[in-house]
Image 1 (cartoon, rainbow, N blue to C red):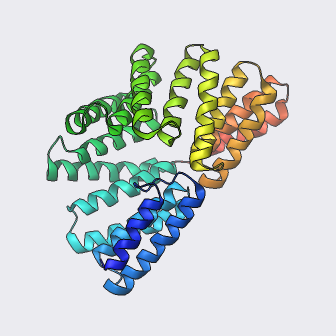
Image 2: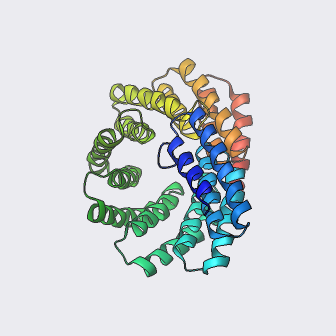
Length: 340
């Protein structure tokens, strides 16, 4: 890579928070502009098919993905993978990274059938190259487990998450943010299987690690707060859940902007809690804002759109608006009939 392109890419990463994770919309816009300049410089200096161009493409795609600009990210990730496969062959570490990145994007879009073979190929590649206890193997295990969890295939997800946690603790130590990610994800599948006593200490340990390592306003803290709140809600501890859901929403809005998918998740979660409490007038605007965000970033047929529509329909039925509820229920059925 040319020296100028490298410097620009490093600057873009720094503007995005050091690990391509911008904390504010303005920061990410600046980072994207810088990364685009780095890409242009590399293409001009090295040619469009040079491996260092793939590195620039990958960085820019990651920035677009964080900002939920998925169409742009997909095009860039695909081009990066094509360059790497042509330059290095199918079993190179760079190809493993590209497989994982593209699979993660498809997962974000609910395109699970496209994501699964890419995650599996990435995991197989990393295990063959690096052995069973390398951090890249742990990350791949975590990612494949997450795909299964998103589909409700928790029996497949749980052992992968446990193995991922073991890898992380062995390689980076018990207080590393990567360990918190594994703890949080294992807690999710425990909760989904009603293993609440197992899930709660996992969530709390994840939250403690993330707050200590990243500060109280990091998106990871927003995630941990949301998940712990959801556990309290499942156990009927609504008074404990509400402030955690509110804090999660506040953290995510500050860190990611008001139109990010994670903000939509927090809006939906708080709406569900209010509906359970019979606070329909407070739940409805939260649901509708969540729906607006998901339709914008994921399209009208995204699985999360169906989830929010279903929640609104239930609220309409509880408030004696059956005709409005029926229209939404029909749309939910149509979305869920689409094979992803």
